[in-house]
Length: 356
Image 1 (tube, rainbow, N blue to C red):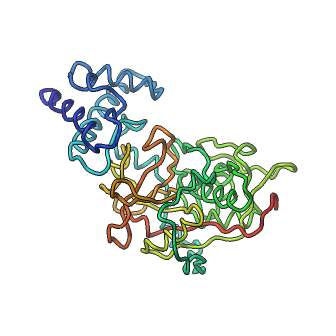
Image 2: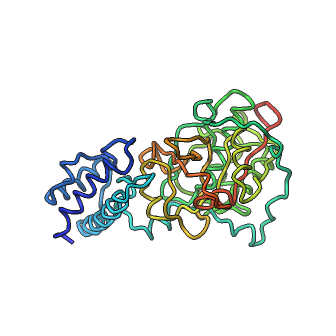
Image 3: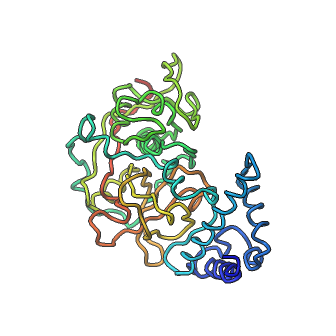
């Protein structure tokens, strides 16, 4: 492999500039000079480790992670060389093998609905007759999206997707953007959802309804692990919803209709190496075989002829475009890229008030 490193780094450097003519040439976050010479590889790993606060328990562990880092760097270089509509870059997952990544950072479990849990409700779709949709929507600029959060090494994406959708509809209904508690879902919504072991958003919406609301993140902060369910505090604020609905499956236009009115929780097949290292652009690359992760759709639009849906992830701001990803739409696939039209739902909030 060492004899191929000069070619690899040249490819990576030039691919970073040419993967898409509209993006920052330092797509992996480092200068071309850092990438051209093989002798710079260890320096690159060291600087990356410092940037992401990586500390290894033993020299053996550091050597292991260094090898994984080099393998992942090669994948990034080879993918960017293809000059597609999206590009990859080094992020906090660069020293994590793909198998390990899939085991620890996903968490959507669609199969829960077939294992004794009640089926997803056959609810009405309130936006079915929506017409004259705007050509673009972005709830971030409408004040309905909280800053990107980080689920950590825990399969709690379902809780983050649920909370982001509730935060959105609450802001639309009340005018107040309030960060809500994923940890409460982790600790207390345990009948069918399983904390770091995974869950689905509909069950979490149902829990919030049955629990007469969900606490704020300030009152019930996230721990990156499962904890004990806390009783309601007398003066703690909660946000309520009055229902939830499913978006009709395999229908791009239905998702756009819903998204024109509010952020939407979406299941996605995100367990691919390309998704692990997504850095920017309109993603239409490799996906995993089944739905395994949950995001929150927060808008749609077009960029240089590429139609997309923009989604909020829960892997922190160092992943993707400051924590967001643009997924290509208009491909003609009924299920959409990475199955994004297969499992989408949203909360309903008719009442405008705090408290149960």
